[in-house]
Image (cartoon, rainbow, N blue to C red):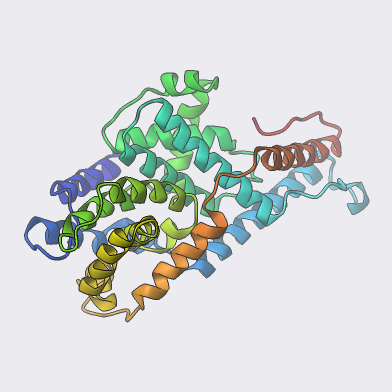
Length: 338
């Protein structure tokens, strides 16, 4: 834990300028320079293929572990005794993940927690579930959600006790405390997170001529809320997410669209990536910024909304039935994940 706290302290020093703008130099450039050397950049900025691979492997491990546990309880039962109920599909797992990500945002709002806590909690939850499947019965999604919030409050120096968090959602706070270490281990104690909200604020300050409307930044921050429900935060740096949010928010106004287009022209595709990714490594990714913004927009269009409650209840019911069937096949009564 000391290692994580020391890293977080260094991260707060990087954030002290409250800016990631690439134009004015000084504190802004120093703040930008922290991201390329961060654990987020090195360990938690993943390709879409890597995310899919990790989740597929986590799913396979959860199913294998459940079947092995069932077989062990019945002394190696023949395959004919296996439950006939299938576990939720990968798409249904994604629905569960997004449901709890939305819940994190709502719980943080209910506790009047700052945006940085909400963003960090969602990011930690996302990271943990790249290597742990929602099918894994050893990790309750509800408890994982609450523990992510609890840890985020610590990381962002906005402490809320586990007891208070548990009471707010009628959950035993001891489960949160018990889950903390295993979740930290699953995150490899890498807790530094950079979210797009700060970048939105800084980039908005760079738009001077033409000047955008006062409503652009609040709308862009609302778009960030939706972006955080996609896989984009696991794939793109916060500056790209912020630009995508600004571009989406600017679509409502010709004046705002013009201001954002001028900003994009000033940035240039190579300049932003050199600053965000590889400036210290002395290399260039040569990535087309416009193409990446389009990728974020596509993710937002398909995965950025709040999931349907009835659909989530159906998947949760299916998961509970699968768990019960596994338990029943060994002659042991069992329930679902709380």
